[in-house]
Image: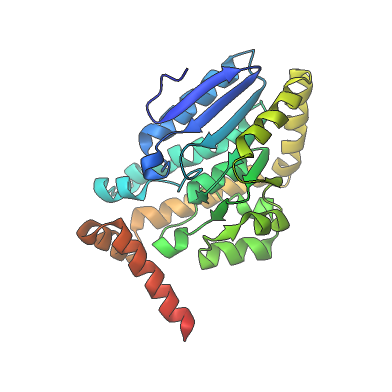
Length: 275
């Protein structure tokens, strides 16, 4: 069983299962949780009996993304602090892409921002019918940490989603745009993920690892890793300077709470788009 505090970790039948386990916060990814995800992936990768890594969320959602409330409370400032924060965010996201073992995301409910990027980073993404995806960062005055979306769908879809801060993308639209693998009935996402993992676990692990390496190399030869690092540098410049939109959002969140800040954000865009 798990000896973590913000995730659960089990290993059985060749499958390591990482479960985001902060249901009271919709599994928001705080610093502790990010470190524990890395520790769990380390454990899975070093365990020769593990052949597939599955990730899912407890409670009502996969994850709401990076923890804005924790950021609101800590008020990080300065280039060095933001570099540490964003490097941890980015490196955790990319663990699932870079792992030599195949990775599967089993998604239900909200899958937003940094959590969406984890789902994109996984080799296979299973979505329950109630899954909702989004990259709302620009609406918060923040940038994109791991710019994977353009590599997983077309440029028109990626720019539409990111520029508008879309956060209500249905599983059906996600499948149409190509950034999930399949849709399953509500509540069947984890069992489907486990079923797929059990099949992959039967295959020679060296064959699977080398094939994943070859598949990923296709993207890396197109410059994916370099582009992601450059996008991360751009996000660092955005966050370390701080946009006026984000300062306004965080001020409202500190004064009146996160729900009030989100309501202010939504009302602001609704008013602008209704004219």
